[in-house]
Image (cartoon, rainbow, N blue to C red; front, side, top):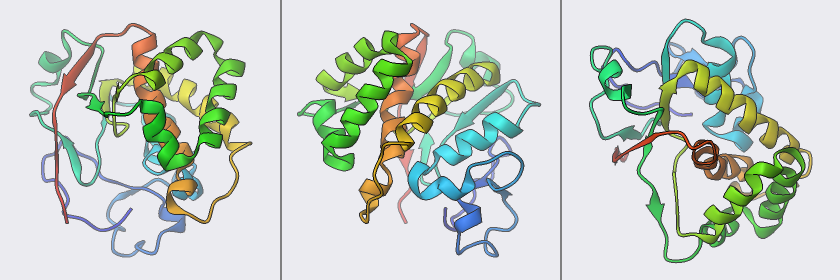
Length: 217
C-alpha cells in the first residue's frame, strides 16, 4: 500500500493494493495494480491485503502454486521455482506458525475490531457455514491462531479458500458499521485473519507451520 524495497527474487510478484484509492500511484506504477481485471481495489481500507487475495483469485490462472506475504513480512524459509515441489510434497498449505496470546483469541480480536463485529462474524458463520461454527468457537476460546493471512498452496486450493472466505466477508460487510478509527475500518481484514486458519483447520488439511521474519522501516 506504500513504496518499499522490492524483493529481488524472481518468485515474488509485488502487487500494489488499494491502487484505485492510493496516493502513491506514480511511485508504484511499475507494480501490478489490484485495480486491474476483476477487483475490489476500492475496498482496500476495509479489506487490507485481502484485495490482493481477491485479485489473484480472479485474475491469475497460469500457475500451479500461489502464495501471499507482505511488504514487510516474509516466510522464514527459502522459496523458489526450483524447490517449490519439494516444499509442498508433504503438505497442502504452508502457513506462519501460530501466534500465542495469554488471553483468548476472542479477546484479542474483540480488542481490535470490537465485540459487536465478532458477534456479526459469528452470526454470519452460523447462517452460511454452520459446520464451521464449532471450529470458530474452539479457536476463539483458545489462545493461538494462524496470523497475517499468509499462505502458500496450489492455486486450485487457493481458489476454494477464496470462494469461501469472500462469501463470509461479503455477508459480514452488510452489517459492519462504518468506523472513524483505523482498527474499526479494518474489521473485515481482522475477520479474514481469524478465518484463514479456521478454513484449513476445519477441512483437516495438512498445514506446514514455518517461522516468518519482519522487515521494519
